[in-house]
Length: 289
Image (cartoon, rainbow, N blue to C red; front, side):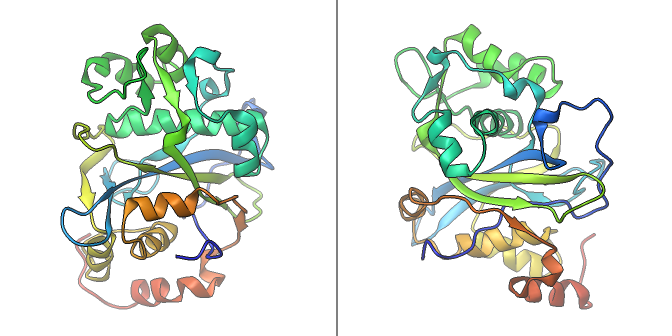
């Protein structure tokens, strides 16, 4: 897969966004776009070439993307803007990430923290190591702290410091950046990361935002979408198509080692890469929803 191929993120705003709230923290925005992160958890197929990706189906009560199949992710929280203690971070720091992501060091650090937090909240997978440098293979003992994060009562940095844990930033790779079109109302500036699922790691534990979750071949998800069984927003569909081109997780991660993100801005309906998506969604087909 060529590093020249354009990447687009896991999701973007598909409905009319809310106005920028009065009194909002300006550090959570870039040109009136709310910062957000998404994470593609990847593992090799059990047999044959290709990868599997972790997704969940959002509950129909969610205000954004109800019943859509998405990757873990969400908006950057004010508590993600903190300056982490040096003992809480292992691997490339804010300056390195700022260069790769094409943003300020403040935002780069917050985006990495947000990505780690969102994955923990939505899947129970903790991208961190303990005092001995060992990966946290079972994070269920932190269920109370995870729930507090979901309620926005506890920040990731405070949690890591109190438990003597460190983020291992080398596990993440920059994958994509999507900016909503220039708005008079709020859009997202979404940064996507890829993570290789560690061998021997315990399974995932979906949050209450999901009605179902699991590991799937991207080809299977796309077939389900074609049949009307899976709901995808445009960029998720495009990301799944990209994943179909990888024979292994190691191939994907090696390619992403050299990616410096360039923001893509615009309306997907105007992009020729999405013609098939719009042709299929506008056609009459069996629908589960």
